[in-house]
Image 1 (cartoon, rainbow, N blue to C red):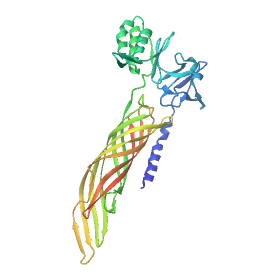
Image 2: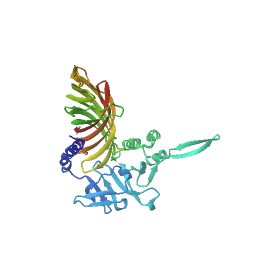
Image 3: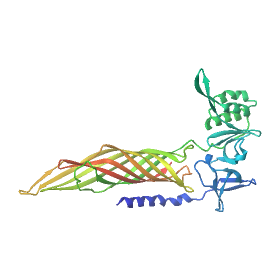
Image 4: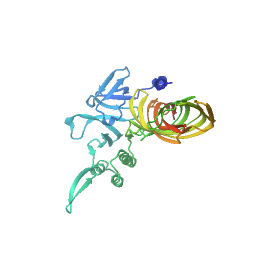
Length: 411
């Protein structure tokens, strides 16, 4: 079977599971329009709403509208994230933007483009660090003024203000640290608040047990002698695998990392013939081989449908090969007079014991919103000098292209 047919088969297998991706589910995305009405629907997922200028919203009747900050008051996503429209501090004339509401209470924490803001009934202030250069004893020294600490102390001042000073003095200007400080404030003040990022883990880790089949096709390397015509009884081999996938990074939502370990084992036969002037060689070798496969990939999420994620990946595959010859025979016939035939039992075929090979892949993560799902991948790997044939005192090296299709279950 050609690579084209294998690729077509793999793609058909990927999409055979597509009906699973369109099962009915309740829409939890919403917008709040300028009149204050909450309208449920689906917001076509961008990959970082903290930077978005508009949102594509599809209502329950299937009507799609692209909303800008000045057209709605707020929108929310099914994962708990919430965003509100308002102008930047002291820049009201420049229009409104979508701020993420990280934490909401009598004092709220907001973010926009990796900048952080605090808000209460009277104030809306940005938290920032001022960097400046100062002349100290004739030397130019850069210093940082952590202006945000003073603003936090001012806005969070109250009965627990003094107790919070030590906490604030150790707070870095990051989402995790700011949330921790706000939680300490609300715990001390005994006031209610709502954290809108609690359902957003830093990364999602999944186990992916799977199984598949790989197909290899070889060609002669440039530094080899004349090609030795040969054929394997089969170019296919099944494999099993257990992988680890790290995806849905909060800060890098388009990227994923996966690795794992796979294993394939089987029996095969190689037959070959070599014609030289007045000589003819033929050889057969039966062998058993096993391979431990360790893939390492970085994936990039290209696009999403309602429940599916499509991605491409680049990385490398480490292969550790073990080969055991069961039977081998070489038939050497001299065709000029007198005709002689020599038979010898010697191995003519060998695998490279270990290889580090570049690889690419296409994948689909079915039901990506669910805790459990299905992963389907087509992978193409280039193995340099994957095996060697040693016949007639000449060694010929062969590169291999290995195409594989895997289907696994994300746990």
